[in-house]
Length: 284
Image (cartoon, rainbow, N blue to C red; front, side, top):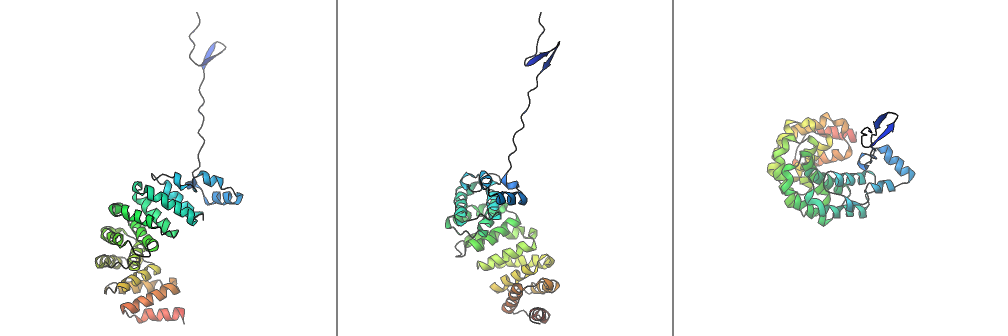
């Protein structure tokens, strides 16, 4: 009688040894999102853009709204210096088609990217104005600040004031979690868009007075400009603001100095110490 032989085994002498199926290791796919700066430099030095094309950087029509694929490719487009007007417009057209399926983080990041690329496509702005209002409660403080800042660059004709007013309703709920930089961006954006919201600016003034040390010189200049632009009489705002300017006098530059001087003149705020600082630091 022949002994039972396991299936797939081979005979080696008197012993039957079962064969093991070797597992083939899958080839690792390198995503363009994980490329380092050295990798990008190497690809560019070799003149090989085909590798980039394999990452679909130049084919926005194939990108999906789920996850972070679309926003990451748009960010890399700006980072690598390939944001030509035609290609950015193709990204904008793709965004209009998939904006309803994008998450809040993706909406904020992509809007900031389109603003950096100076894209002012009316259809793109309409898509943001349509999908943003209902999702603003899900946005982080940074996301809200990014949207405000992006609107000032994408909507110079101020056709979407309703969206700014909706932002003014949502921001106060999360204002304690805003950083100083983000608060300055919000105040500056509302001033540039001429959206006068006394309640929002009163809340911002309260937050500013509770932690003025978080604001840089540029942030202090933006705050001063915003409040003087609307003529808001907020006496409690100016003492900590000017004190912050004195504490950071080494960081002053001509632009921030002129902004602060103009704002102080418009608001009729007098401080001999600050004016002497401006005079001697730039003209003395």
